[in-house]
Image 1: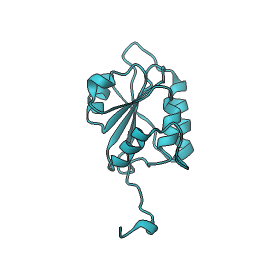
Image 2: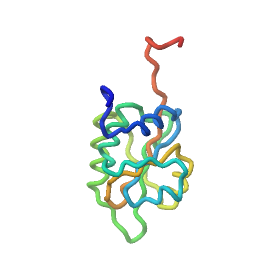
Image 3: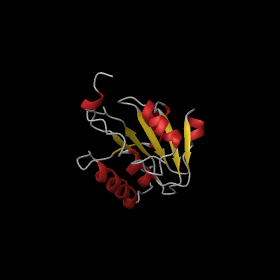
Length: 150
């Protein structure tokens, strides 16, 4: 355990977050997402839900302020419906860390799959909500004056 780091964030995810550069994306997927067939770098967090991971991750990184949509979820397939409580629970976690975060954008299922192939990594969670996947784009982390010049 580390001071100030959520216990939901395991060592492998800490490493991934540290390796990611600004503009890199991280997919937090629901338990049904075909992560292993879409991406070579998959982290398992089966006992953790997306809201808990969002809270822990967004305590360590910021959202990309240079793009209009640093948060992206999957849109419902035609004839299907979204459960508004899913996005609401994600917004609560996001706004707890970044109150001015932009709205979550929605893209089609297959566009989401294609975009996730270029993400830095995919984290498979224990979330069982339909359309429970979200992409988070990492922003530029400000460097403390204490560490400048190193």
